[in-house]
Length: 466
RNA sequence: UCCUUCUUAGCUCAGCCGGUUAGAGCACCUGACUGUUAAUCAGGGGGUCCUUGGUUCAAGUCCAAGAGAGGGAGCCA
Image (cartoon, rainbow, N blue to C red; front, side, top):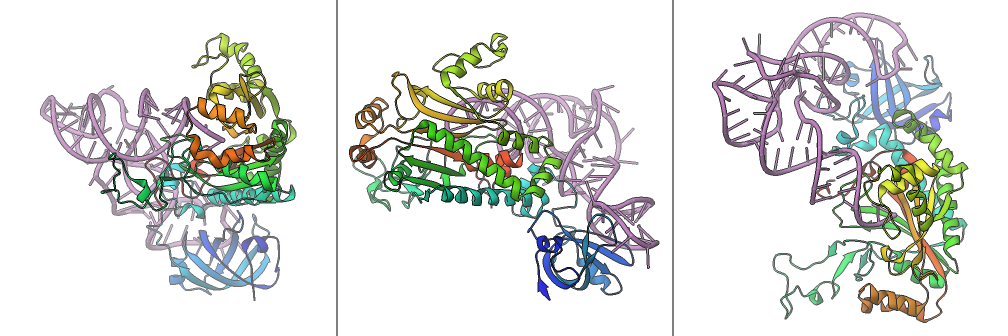
């Protein structure tokens, strides 16, 4: 007797044979004579139907086989007599591995709201929706490594704990082993981090970029893919305190190469998700968002629009939305674009992904390469419909003097970045890279509305359950 | 952090201008039915109306504070 997954059985592997399978019951239907069990093992969206003739199984056993029960089934894989499935298992043996009390088990064979499922995140992998999302999430993660490996990038593991306070991407979580109630103090009365575990103040990383650049300056092409932590009090459907980020960094590449990579990369990932998770995406399309498939296809079949920040400002200024005063925030050169402005460009004006480049230097980070106009830097943001900014990146400032000046202007603690500056001192070269928010990608590909529903156990302000 | 909406059965929700014993669908339990597709049909059990305080003859309903959640904004990926 061979052991199979549901996925294998549904493609008729083992037809006519005795088969052996384990999984969880999704629903039970039936009458006095026969019961039909939908058995799912997570290998795919679909369940397989197990037919249990009541003369073969005790009433007591069948009463315990409820939604949520883990069972082991031995039987014969046969063509189905009913409609709705091509094959089914005629059961010979059913063994209960783990009961699920029908009166207490929170998941029912009905639709639940996303909010309710978030409260029972420990059980939601057992639903169709979250099974689909997490299979898609896996497929995208795997395709990311696959893509970079094919392109000659090396996977670089940058540190999770950082001693640098200068990553400049947001509020950080402190990492310490000091006694919170009674920390050692220095002569100035401040907490003495010299006595802490690392002998200095440390935090969880907000970006692997700076270390990624160090790797790229020897390995040429590298990428990071790891967890990132931001202690910002952000309460939105697009932010997490702990999320995963992909950050490629390329030596001897400029801003245009960076845009080319970003576009090719995202399209590759979407294409692989469509190829490898067709049932899951179709399910999400049919259940939650019937424009999902269309939107994914449209990204694949259109070139991303590439315009500069200054061109974007001109478009906004001449838009009827602006003239009618529909924007809440004013538009003029030098402002940081607001969500409403980005959405206008992507969803109304162009109706496809947009790459904006060459932003004013005053609204961007210190490490971005200064353009010849003295006003802008070689930055780029990739803006997507529905979710806004999915990628932020730039060509890096490789000229020592320019970088040093900028660091001073922006009051960044220069002494903490001596190692970063060294790469500009020794064998510096043009290089570029970007950061892609992994959950935002999953959000786009799954069509979900809230980022808390595309990560197994979301961490947000006031919530670190599970 | 700001704006806004919501919180009634296990889940999803109704509950009018404040009025007597708080309802429905699904789920659960019991029964019926020879192949069901979220099976169907009949019956049954199930309530801290988010918490605290207030107004009132009377509060699920009105007021205040608090807690939790959703949506939008800011910050960003």
